Image (cartoon, rainbow, N blue to C red; front, side, top):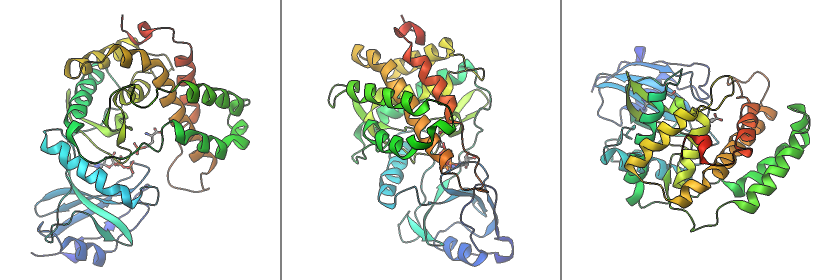
Length: 335
Ligand SMILES: Nc1ncnc2c1ncn2[C@@H]1O[C@H](COP(=O)(O)OP(=O)(O)O)[C@@H](O)[C@H]1O
Ligand SMILES: N[C@@H](CCOP(=O)(O)O)C(=O)O
């Protein structure tokens, strides 16, 4: 294998937290049978980890260095899940194994992996056909995950929200007057009414299937990325997350046609029980609160001058208020 150290330099970009030297990169790549490095460029998108587009003589790959919010102990779950789903035909990145058989290794003091490059672009403007394709892909992913043996509790489900709220409540008024009080009331309601364990079907969920994690080639969905919040939880909660992430228009209006298309194409792959459907409005409230709280926390704890621009928590306040006033499934385009 020929390495080309002069051209291997990893150029950094906005959301790359860890810079990789040529020497470290070449030592790392020598552990795989991928040929020489042609280029390595930091990817500006993404918020959690450092990602590089690495092009070698055998093609493009994504090099990910896991930063502090991704727990090392969770990595075997994430990597095993991507392998499991890909084996079942779900379009997603596949971790590469080195010459020693290992996929997970160290680079610059961080856990690091190389995964296959997924072709496609995430949709900047959401059209109804995107929502239909997403519903089908999610149903397929849930079915494919049914026999995945590993488990990972969702630490950002109802039990995780109060500690996040407690960490933010004293300064929530800086973002919106009265926000802390309103969030506390919502938290009380959700804690009291959240579905008890065993009442709804559980399995592997992606838990962050936002548009920037879903790739399309033309009108065809080509794959899903960023499995680093995936966990074992109520399956229909994944749909609740996507109702919020995909079905609101930029002006804040909820688009019931998009919701109907997403839900109906999901149900063609994996039918939903009456109990799952009935739980949807409450789960959508919970999902809105979850993203509101993580965004609020990130905004209030944003280091001055940090690369990544914090996302707006109030977008999720508006979404939460929509679901609070939903009186039936008609609001989501269902009878
Ligand atoms: N397997 C992949 N194939 C192609 N592009 C990828 C792949 N994984 C990540 N990317 C690119 O990197 C960006 C950030 O990745 P993501 O996993 O969302 O990072 P983070 O976990 O830091 O949010 C994506 O928007 C995409 O452009
Ligand atoms: N989807 C979350 C933030 C996580 O970002 P990702 O780049 O890891 O998908 C939000 O919008 O709050």
